[in-house]
Amino acid sequence: MPLKPHPDFDAFCRRIQNLPKHSSSQFNGSLFRFVSPNHSTVTGIRNGRGGLKASGRWHLKGSFPCLYTATTPETALQEALAQKRYHSLPDYESLPRVLIGLKAKLLHLLDLTDGRIRQRLRISESKITECDWRDENRFENQESITQSLGRAIYNQGYEGIIAPSSADQPDGVCLVLFPSKFLRDNCVQVQTPVDWN
Image 1 (cartoon, helix red, strand yellow):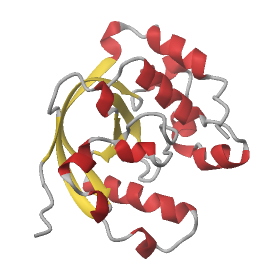
Image 2 (cartoon, rainbow, N blue to C red):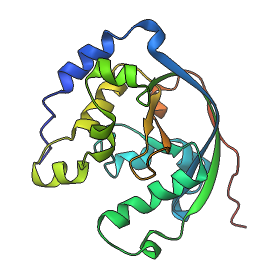
Image 3 (cartoon, helix red, strand yellow):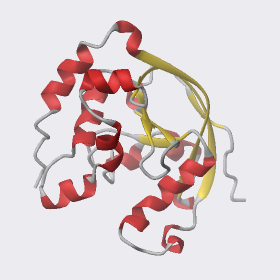
Image 4 (tube, one colour):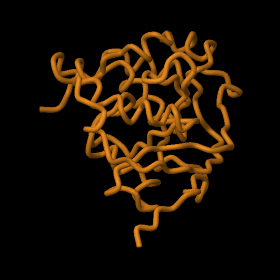
């Protein structure tokens, strides 16, 4: 049965539409992901289709391609371990993982690490990082507030989100990218392709 939409979705859409034009952020630099060896092809790393198979903090399973990355390898590792740790499983249950480096040049992101943006959207940093989206999905049969905000940002045409990491507090930063919204070809490139030969 599909999950109920979060009640704040329409309000988020309006607030995003009403943001000043200069609110859009750019990113030009390196990003990191820890991926399963089974999903370490260049295409598999960049297309975000894994987001169609499983839900995450910023999207629901099957809704749109979504690529979770981090600005440092350390944050990427904490994010990769978070799923199993949430269920109190040992870290080795998350392995093996391959560290992938990406080069990204993105022009239209919404930066939720910026307190002024969060204030306009009426969502706090603690609401973003402490939201138990799994619990809301499973027990309330509802899209979480972060998933609702992610869907609103996606629907408004952003290439992705800059967000505080929930797994690497207080300084970790994640970029959640929407490949189907990229404004240019090759704006995200794999710097370290995996060759298993």
